Image (cartoon, rainbow, N blue to C red):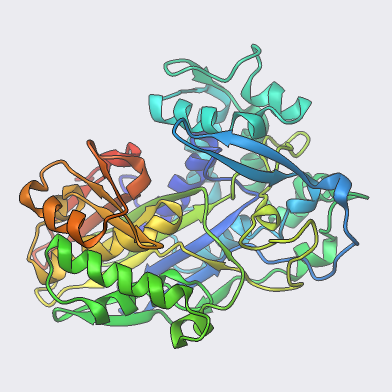
Length: 462
């Protein structure tokens, strides 16, 4: 898109549509997300919230549309809830429209063309994509339509095989000509909800993308723009920087531990700020910056998917109403008509030397620790972009420490003393998120990195 005359917004939209084709476990027209955007002409930074909203009304308990499955992560298992009653009002497609209205230069027909081609001609499945699909195999094979899409030969698409989704290509073809509520997809989604789900046309028509003022934090003279409330992650990262005393691994671990304790304290100010249902699973991230100073850092999620496929349109709706953080006591325990909190935190940094950096991460509740550590290393320890992303990472939660050993050297021993309950990971792991970032310096030079923990990719377009 950049080579075709587009800008950072165009590139992000095209990448998001391609993610729906190539990473359907993480990105879907049935989900939503957040975008931190920078207007290169005005210098204005804004956060676009297009995260799912709970339906306006509950249609009773709907236990028939709400069931449990178990996902196998190898070393652990986790229960997820799927079915029609787990679908919140999606914001992904309204989000793409709002992004386009905020400075895109190319048409939707141009922006969706690569995703349409990939859906119809197929794309090669990577080892990481195959692994993600095996983790949520029970969801991807929960219904006959899902099995037809994800396991047409009887098993999930293997690494190295080609995956096709011509129905999703048809949806993007329709979206290139009309709004999503005018496509057949909206009607088909609502038809799936009849009698077993909570969504209505009023929910879809009433959905609004919300523009929010970012949370700006000074870190070593840099201004770091974070996702504000009601999202949780930006506030948690800001609080962690207030607790930071030293930018070594011990200092960062102590800051993250203090933040986690404050988060868990219902009596604390931070606990009250974050007193809102929180969902935090299944995310992917894209960062773009262009030569005109436009930037887009965007993170999206589909939960883990609800197990159904919208007939004729090749995508799985979200299952966000089924997440226990949102809905802890049954199929209708969620608050009506509420924009949910999230751990997603697309981030922009204005460095004092003129650098503009866009970054973000997937990784559920580890997003906050991943972004905190990368930003701290760049803004306080003068690390280069790649060095900050590749450095050993840690996460603290409930007095338990997870830490990567590679390259940490003698830093591990003091951490073990501080956190008797710990796990040392011998290799870099997707558990610690995947920080994908791009930097433009004051001379117009670009650097970028895709975190190999999550098979990230990066490119600088000349």
